[in-house]
Image 1 (cartoon, helix red, strand yellow):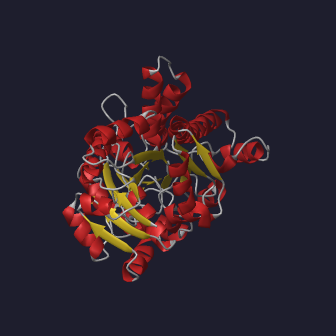
Image 2 (image 1 turned 45 degrees about the vertical axis):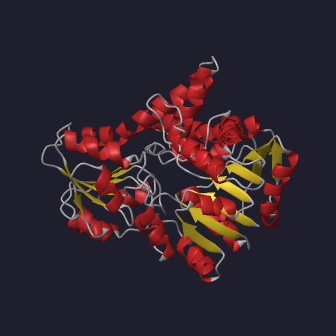
Length: 431
């Protein structure tokens, strides 16, 4: 099929590249001319494992092209995906300005029957909202049918998530339009759920909010384990053997971040509020997450008797999760700001996110590798669980640190092994 994808962020670029890899002709559109020029040269604006190879391959095969001309893309496509950003507004609501702008641009260029797909994460009712814009703004007597097709891509594994999805959700009031979108996904062999637009939009928020709830729940359990002497790893192992419980997101740490979970939990709270309902559980999920980073800080405060002045803290990991350079809502941000406020000096290292981090963090020092960051440090804090941190040489680490203190905010180390190497060790919920 001939497809256009508007927006070349994580969702849009991965979606466009993968559809091209499945044999479709894909035009990716963005208003950022510098980004588009870079993509034409094979320069990606994001880090996502394997994505550059897919983009380069499909550019070479002339199945994937890039433009700033939305009208051109609309006129040459059967299906247009809207995959622009829907940032969080001041009250937690999703900001639809970019979605509205794209819908108006599509309407202006519409000269043939078209299926318009909301791929962005949008509030319940946005499908009808976009339909209204298209009907009111279109200049020709052409049909435009809106379909909801929420994405479930995880940064760091987005290509695999696209090609091997758990399910495909499609919502639409026009059965033919919904089936046309479903045909795009048939090669993947995944279950396809076709429902109404409102339910499809709700599925996306409900899924992300539920996963966020799991993370905050296990963080609370870990915090209790710290206080009673239990080991959260053993607790999770015991819980996970219950067939009713999925242990995949029961990984305690410093809280969730990124472009989806924080934004989507706030948005669902706002959706509920506007519908006259108070989402008490989800409000607690947010409250727990916003305070979770303090668990790591408090562990250092106990060791140093609350005296951070002049102490050097090495921070390993800055991105909100491994295998991405995304710093949006990353736990490293409040961790580093709090350390600086308390008078500590911070030296940080991340394999790919340091350039992005420098744009969002107060001035700190950055090191070329993890050992350079730890040299002369009074403490090491693990914030992101990159693989290169997991099998570290503890003997070498002990030799270069001023004080042998490790705060393991992601529980990547065996406490016994680290303590046998002479370190003071504290994880999240580890006895």
